[in-house]
Length: 307
Image (tube, rainbow, N blue to C red; front, side, top):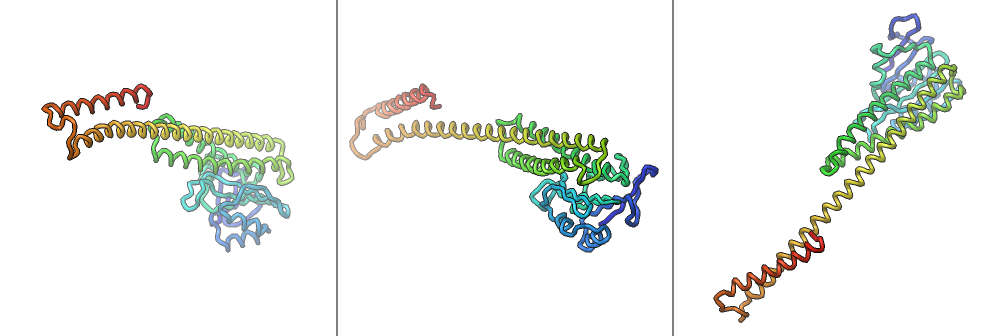
């Protein structure tokens, strides 16, 4: 689906217009091949780069062909079909238009459409910066949620089970996807600052630099949280291993203690003449021998901290 948005400084709100005009923002969501072909023809776009936008695992990068800038990035998305937590977004900046191409809905754009964030489609560079800012803020919100979730599970470290371990693996997956998306995007933003890929004014450079700083903070925080998760997993593994060893030691001691009366009773239960076989108090004597032997062995194990 292709939607055309337009707003100038004089307009009170963002409008949907029926066709392409100078200063338009074109958003293509899950476009068909026919719609992509139409855009390529109308806007004189590079067909190979537009084909790359259809790759769901396309990595962030920056390209420029025939005076048109192609900025590939990724944004947080709860993907159900693919094994990733981000979705690709292509931002194309031409002489008189801005085009965004996405294979999935972009929830971050709702702030533009409902008027909470004011944008002017005729200011191409500022529109690009606004798009990147809402994506960065969505990564920051996701990071805050992950940090809280990790802390909740971290305080229950001695009670962590299979469900918590699976959650930690999912946390790591989300954080790795975040770093994979934000880090190359930040590299591309560095090239934007040079001004060779698009026109960047002095005040825009400050905004782009602030955006790069925010992205680096996201990357650093994500890596720190990854180390925290790794430490928790290592601690959990150590606790589980220690608990398993303790249980094995306990079972081993119990096996040995139970083996002693089994051996003694087996010897006195043979169908051959045995000492005290006809004695009046033979059973009590044998029981006392068993109790003494078990007590001595238990004392020895306790003395050596075996249980």
